[in-house]
Image 1 (cartoon, helix red, strand yellow):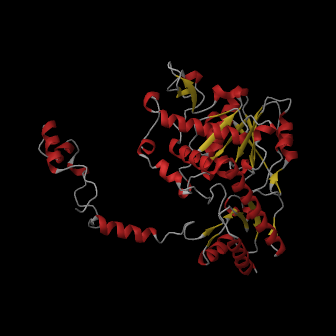
Image 2 (tube, rainbow, N blue to C red):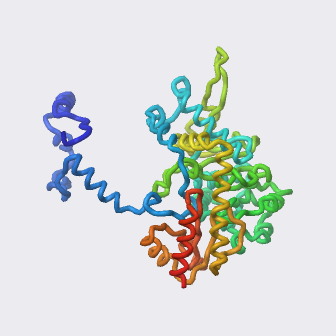
Image 3 (cartoon, rainbow, N blue to C red):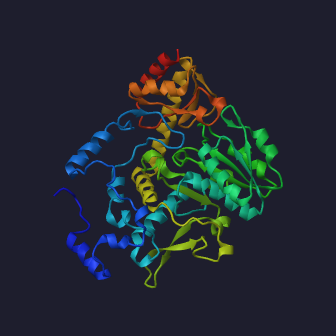
Amino acid sequence: MSHRYIPLTETDKQEMLETIGIQSIDELFADIPEKVRFDRPLDIRKRKSETALLRELSALANKNITSETHASFLGAGVYDHYMPIVVDHVISRSEFYTAYTPYQPEISQGELQAIFEFQTMISELTGMDVANSSMYDGGTSFAEAAMLACGHTRKKKIVVSKAVNDESRAVLQTYAKGQNLEVVEIDVKDTVTDLDALKAAIDADTACVMVQYPNFFGSIEDLEAIKSFTEGTKALFVVSSNPLALGLLTPPGEFGADIVVGDAQVFGIPAQLGGPHCGYFAATKALTRKMPGRLVGQTHDDEGQRGFVLTLQAREQHIRRDKATSNICSNQALNALAASVAMSALGKNGVVEMAEQNLYKANYMKDKMIEAGFNVLPGTSFNEFVVKFNKPVPEINEQLLEEGFIGGYDLGRIDDKYEGHMLIAVTELRTKEEIDTFIEKVGAYNA
C-alpha cells in the first residue's frame, strides 16, 4: 500500500455521485465557465509512495537548527525549558487531543476538571483570586486585560511600559485602535521602566497601568512602587508575568495587582516556531464577571458527587451583546492541559527548584561576562539579561550557529537604539560547560 490512510475508495465515490444524480465529478463544476477553469495539470512533482515521501521530508527536517541540535540562549518570550515526559503521554490521549470545547458537562468531566486544575494552579502562582480557562497566548491576554480595564473604569487612556514585550504591545495597539483608546508608552531607563515618567503619565483619565515582571529585558520591576502610583485613581494595575518566575518571585497579587496575565509556554509547551502557546488571565474577585473567555467551576450533582461545569462565559454568543466583555470564542485547552500536567509533575518544590536554577545560572553567566569585560547592562535578572557587543548581533549569531549555539535575541530588531544589544536567556537546561564555552566564543567574535 502506498498510502497510510485512504479516506475514500472508488466505490464510495461512485455511490455518492449516484446519490446526488450525476455521472462524474466534473459535473459538479458545470456552472463554472470553461474559460476560467484550470485546464492543465498542476506543475508539481509526481507523487511518491509514503515511504519515499517520509524519507524525503525527514531529510529536509534534519536540516533544521533547533534546541535539540544546538544549545539555545534565545528567549524574549519563548524559552527552552525542561518538559516532563508525561506531558506528551497525557495530551496524546484521544479524549484530550480530539476534544473541542466542553459545552456538555455530562460527557466532558475530564476536560473540565483539567481546565479547573489549570485555573487553580495559575491562581496560586499569581496570588490572584480567580483565573480563567486560558487564552490564545500571552499577547492576547495582555490586550484583553487593557480592554477589561477600560470597560470597568470607563476610561480611555492606557499607560504601558516599553519594557513590555514589543509583540504584546503591538497586539495592544491593534485592539486599542478599534476601540478608539489612547495608548501612552513609557520609556525605559537602563533596563527597567522610567518610574518618574510612569508616575507623571497617570492621571484621572487613566484606565490602567501595564508593566511586565520580569520585564522584556529580563529585569525585575518595582511593583510596590508602581502600585502606589495608582492609589487615589481608578486606574487598574495590570502585570504581565512569566509564571515560572513566580515560583521564586513575590507574586503580583501580593503587590495589589488587579489583573495578572502572561503565557504558560514555560510549562510543558514546546517553542513550536512561536506558537500555538497558552495565555493565562487572572484577576481579583471583583472583576470575575468581566473577565474574557470562560471559567470552569466546581459543583455537586443531586447525588452529592463532585462535578465540573462551565460557570461563566462572557462572549456575545452566550449572553446579551451589550453585556459581553470579549469576543474570545474558545481557549487553548490542549496546551493548558500540557501546562497543568507539567506543573503537577514538577510539584511546588519542583517549580521552585526550576526557577532557582534559572536565576542562578543566568546570574552565573552574567557575572562571568562582566568579569570577561563585556558591557552588561545593569538590572536585577531572573533568567535574561542584556549585553552590548562591538559587532552586529546577527553577525555574532551566525558565527555561534557554526559552533553549535543558538544565540540571543537581537534587540536592534525592536529599536535602532539597541543596535548591537543581545538579550541572552539562560534556563535550567543550560550546563556550566555550555555557558563557559558560549562566553569564550562570543569573546573571540567580539574582539
